[in-house]
Length: 549
Image (cartoon, rainbow, N blue to C red; front, side, top):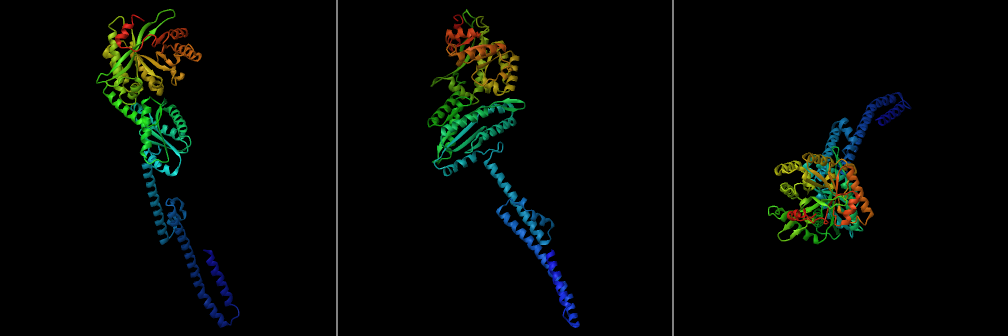
């Protein structure tokens, strides 16, 4: 602005000096007239220069803005000059600046829409983890990006999550999935992709592995441990486990579905083995999985075909120096398959627990056991017997489980104290607060409660003292070497003392020798179950034992 005015001023001074030196009066007059005519012209030139310079600066800013927008379509926040011109510019400059800003904002909206579409296509909206589509895309890229490398795919499914969802609602379930996703992402290494592939299933894709089996197994165990740690919600702690399937592959991968199919097949086999298991894929798994699916289908019809039945294993009581006497039994479920013969409970129980089949089967076991107690109540020899029934986690977590028990008691008319429900540590400690409420409701009915396989899980003494239990059942793993292992003997002695201190009855299972029984009596344990007294037998054979043991 000031530079052209200064030029005009200097030029004017020069003209004035020229007009007043070295000239006659007439020439001087002509020079003065010329001077007067030149001053406005110089002022016009100065004004034109100023306007052109301003315009050129504005045009230069707009040009640079266009260049920036072309290379960075999201550059609207970085265009302060254009923003200023759009507000304070004049005429066409202001119009051009406004048009440029509008174009920039359009690009920004388009970019955001593209990002949202990408996110919806490749990311899970609940956990913000990559989804199954992104997992497949990364699988597709791996062979070209990691020549000569080994890869692995882990599929993990949260065990029994449907029961949890049904019990506490989907909003709580969503929160738990988000927390588990965070734990998974935290433990996934840098050469991996963690994803959510379906409702309660996650995946971890790994590449550039030097020792694939060892590395993947270590990661799987770490993930399992992380997921098993308590999750807090509403002032309560909840625990979960996952079943993991693992598929290994190399850079010759051509079928993207193969690692996914193999890892999922391995996961289903792991789930059939119980909660929290890890299974590597091998070619025999497909045949095993097909056989397992057929067995599950057969199990669906086992109840209506009357293939299921109960056996009874005696529970005895003894004092030092006295012969033991039978005080009750445990009802044990068996399946007589029409072509396979007797199917092991270790095979079909996990199958039932991994599906909804455990619910009708569990209800049938409870009703059958109570009908047996009803029959025993009419005979003086058996009227005082107790009967222990195993209750699965799926069955126990049903919102109406207490009502089912109440109706069964009312229908059969048995004395509630004759019925003893056995719960596993994982069932009790997965969701402690809700478990305690259910246990208290069952005890209000008069039912007795026993903690099965005590010492083999992750029992917490903090929770144990709060649980309304009537009995602790020492797992047979501690009984097997009680007479030869000082460590096992010390553990058993401690459990017995702790149970009595908490006013609980203590029973030992897996007692097979008189020496084991005598050691238990020495430690203060007076209730026993095992082959020393009886194998699991039909009800008639069990009743025949009453006069002999």
